[in-house]
Image 1: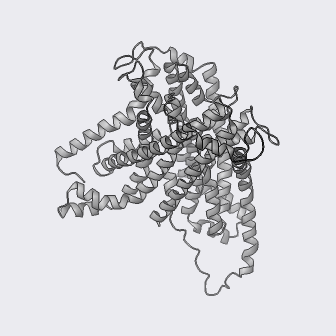
Image 2: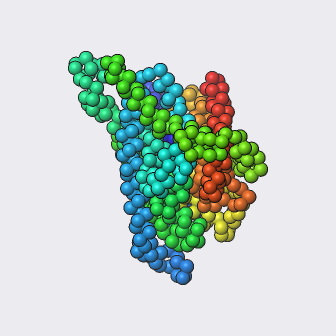
Length: 296
Length: 265
């Protein structure tokens, strides 16, 4: 998943431009291109309409509903209500710091693990990389389900309290999202010329210095891309938090769910949803800009 | 090549192995172990049984498995069609419009899935299109969520496609529809199957949007797993989770077999 996003922005090769017309050919007249452009635009219309009907129109309705409190009329009342509520501010803070901490953890851990797989190869390293691909295709809540046994009331370690704190969610998120950082990193490491490492090594540089001065600069675009993707995914993570069954940890997606489904407070849920969308779309736009810059 | 002394290399491998096993292998092994157990109060699970699987492979769970498979298949097929269409149409557009189209189709990745669920619920619980309470509302939500990934992988593959092929075909007098069907789509087939695998896996594990809008008679497997753990039936839940993992792996295996055949053509 992450690799696709990265190849999309980082790894795309420039499209080779068609060869210029030969000496005997008349260059294409500009008036010929106009009908073709219109045709191309017409072909793009059906998928855009489908997206509009099933994605953009529903989102617009959410924004509209967030401006229509149950008391009737149109007002910013739902926004004023949620910003005034302690629960919302707490959820906002929890979401942001959990996502930032998880991303930092994933970056450090993913960089170290990918480093070993790529540069201290061992028999079976290929199998480990394959395992990571499989791991990515499993849903996130499986990690929390496993942690319920490890830290459950009658579990292996046996401290149920741990899971109901943000630290349990943090552990689960780092565990699940680290492979999302490792995949683009492994792809970037695969393109690194190992002669550079040999040269640095033969000139007397030790491993930490090679990592810092040779590998890290090469890995920065992949780290930036993977890290910001994980940040967005962590901000939006729901399954991991839901499965802890904790009342103590409420993130924004969790608040949307509980307001809409458990309390049937749709205007409130929609207002929280709009805030959540603004945060994550803003960050995702930043991610696209950063990874395009880094790749260019 | 980075660590030269033998001792240091073994130390690095040992740390890697411990981290890797603890973080990635242990959770899956714990779920697998629990699915065969009735108690887990020590280091190892106890009371070995296959009774959990008897519950997890019939009745409600079997129905949920079919629900998940059907939802994933329909949603992936729709998403691949729309995503590929958009990618192909986008490739013919001018750069500025192509960027706009790409941004539009990538948006569902950035919007939280819970919010996608909420918006679909709000929009299709009212006329003109009433889908609430039917299975179609789940399928619509899944399709919206996976279309972005289908579009991204197809348009990435399209950008790497050598334009010489289609130009050669066109210069030999092939009509655009012939070039599309006999040249471009066959060349894209490997990445199309890869995208299909991604969509299927994502849809089968989707929980966030589904929790917002599933009707009682269309319960996918992840919802069933949540329901089981929520009422405290952790061991049954694990068995259902193992069934979900196995089904996902089998589907991915089948898709990758198609892919190998496609890339050998």
